[in-house]
Image (cartoon, rainbow, N blue to C red; front, side, top):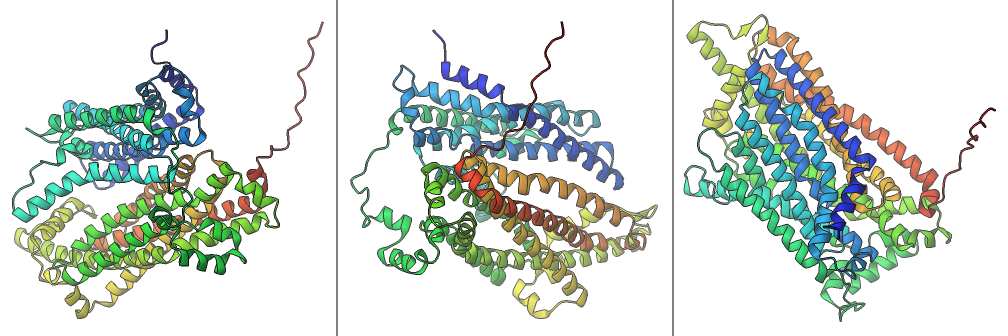
Length: 612
């Protein structure tokens, strides 16, 4: 009798997949590329070997954590729900298999690629031990925290997949659970510390896998082992719940209100009677594909809620923020939520193609007078109709935050110059060595200004500062950065839509289409563009005229502007290429992909006969 037959079979299949091998190669190559970039940049700044090792260690470990915590989104959040939709999960329970057999098999099959990718990166991270600044205990604790985060994400996705049937809802629920568990605990402890005006005390943070990685590098006594034990126990609890729920949730039970258009669930999904009638009168006769693609409204309502919260938060911050430099933090937090927005848009772009091919709707459309070009155009117009206005509001908030962040950088640079001049006058020493700016000194001074709020200009409310006006140079540089940010974000969204539509026609599942879209359009190019733009801007800054003239503020003023311009230029060029290529493939190969027609076979000559 075989022990855990499903786990054995799934492991054998996953180990032989071509993606398992190439994922290890890609992970190791990415880690090497990032390591080379860190070494070159820190060498330009004349940093010591210990500082280089510390920086490289933290960069690689946090990138590995981000990749590991997102594995559950794409690999396990739809693992069981896909079997439910296809009707194959119930066949497994006709045998003597248990819920833990199925759950463990799916968990092992989906975790193999992520675990192999992590194993490929860990030896590269271990190189930092030879540089100094990283201890052996810190390395092993961080490695254990990375494996724990990977298992935590997989277990959370498996639990959501056990109780869900729709792939998009499972993806959204898994993302929400991971965000609450990874960020919610430290955020609650931070709010409590701020309200009670005391130091940070980890109470809820010990349930966060991200806090486990943070405490892995802490010196002295820390809550590392307590947090690791608790998060690992939570992961096993989620896995046990998934195994216990699967045998009871695989059946598709018919509800009493099925087909009833008067229920609240139907109204939440498709809207009220007036809304449905108005949409049919306006869209159905002239654009039937648009009507098919935008009937469901819960996705657009969710984005509208996010846009309303962003606009309200921006208005409150604009009126009540006491320190202008807080907008620098807003811009970084906004970048994180922009990445989540990209993920949502990538999921939405390929959804219609996946569901229409699975249900046979595309074949019915293609035998009607509707052409493939009209279907593509209708899907594009449906995306604009559902998400155009809320995306425009979010883009406006992002632009406003970028403008205020740039102004804050100017104020920080001005205060840095004043303090550097005072220090130079007191100590009678120069702040430059061989024509190179001591960036570490500038960073320390800037941090001091940021923490203490010593500058009276930065201490004034944001609204009063905006009414006071700005210098022409500040206005010009702010406009440049705002334009670059707007073009880059808008082009990324358009590229995600077009490429996601094509991935929806060529991918087997919705999660696979989302993963391909976000990796090929955003993640992989972001790594390349960030590496290239940082190298280019760093070389330009280190050899520029203002560093030789003794202006440390020039680094703080021009670095974000030049980085934004170079990155946006490369991103727009990349996005134009993806848009043109995806649009061409959709218009020329749509019918072939929709009908599943095989490609024209190639003529292969038979092998020569053996000679006598």
